[in-house]
Length: 604
Ligand code: 87F
Image 1 (tube, rainbow, N blue to C red):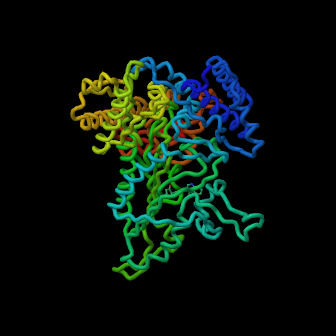
Image 2 (cartoon, protein in one colour):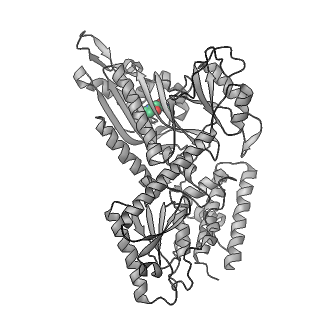
Image 3 (cartoon, rainbow, N blue to C red):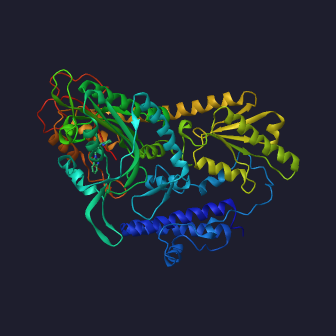
């Protein structure tokens, strides 16, 4: 039986991923029941493979042993698995537009049933992420990195308009520099990774790897800033940082190394600094809303949740309805004069000739953005990419290649795909044409759906004759037959529609789950219904601790974890309504009056 059919290859790849999952669970010391479940699933996939091909597959978990012998620890595919299917004769049946059968071979988990498996499969099978043999670290493949590049280009252009300059500071932090910020870093200390050796010899002094760059950059700021003429100083850097977290890692969402931009600015006046905090926050909101098609709530962090080193923290918060959890999307802090006092960043005030401490901000956005996007838009067929960030916006797939088709007509069809791709490219659309002759149209549909390409264009011999094409939307599955004339404009319009629809869908979700509550019992019930709740709150840290503790549940909501309590997500800038005078704080044991509505919810 054929082991190189697309179905068999897909199944092989599923077996590999599952084998890898088993290995990872074992390495991470996961509970036995979890490992057993994963092993059973692997065995099931192998049985499917045997049913399909009549052959046993040496791979998945077994590959492990072989690889170890060779000293390989990670999940490099073996030569056998790397093989592409052999070119096969042209399709003898018209698979055109009715090949959903193979979808099952794509994702093996459903988003609404097992979110964590679904997520792992989506990001690996869409070729965004490759797993790596250091826990919490992942490879960002071009499909994911290209999204980061779109975000980067947008933000970089916008901050340059504001006069921000890029720079690069070292990734290593001396012990002495890190100590300078001791008071604020105390909470974070367990997450700092240290280099203690070179080769076999101990370093004289351990060197930290930056978890953030305040302590790296601010000693230079102190040197560079002498007079008001050196202000404002606005620097940004695009770099990686390392935070050795011990919570369960998840690609993009919680990783030990991640990419981000960190902006660090210094001003003469508090007012200028304040203005910038909000300007940057609005850019973050635009990244989510305009590029990633994800609505966010803009607000200020509570005293408990703000960056302890600063005066106040602003944030954009997104909502993942599949898990009922909110996620912090990006933060913009006003540091006041806290750091300038610590690092002696001063200038001579031109009016008083006295030394003045600068007012500072810092702001950061990470590759977590990509994970939020996968979670919010992905479905049971795979990734769904918003057109504005999609690496490929339109994929051309030649269809309807039957035995009757002459070679000349076949060539014509391939040529037409490439030609239309070029027309779209010339119009600034990221188009690609998949004219590979060793994959069936059905396999290609499945493949590009899994990768989330917003629009598929199917072209068959009949379409060629009638000067038309069939466009299939990834977000709705809708098929549209269109005349070739003005195709770039029509496709641009369609891509805009997809972008808008994705945003509207996510906005509908957020609106459905965003509520207001004035009673504790109702608050807790709403939380259990996955809601984000705006409730009157006194703003005090001990009270926020109580809200979290007392809203936690014993019931198991998600794989093994008891339902966590509500965290203060932010104090929304747009308050749901005016607080009634004398309104009390939501916590039943709190006798203080409320200061504002605060958004609470379970969160990542
Ligand atoms: C982890 C280890 C050590 C967060 C940490 O948000 C230090 C830290 O300072 C730490 N995790 N933070 C706060 C970072 C604040 C701030 N830095 C610049 C940002 C944006 C960019």
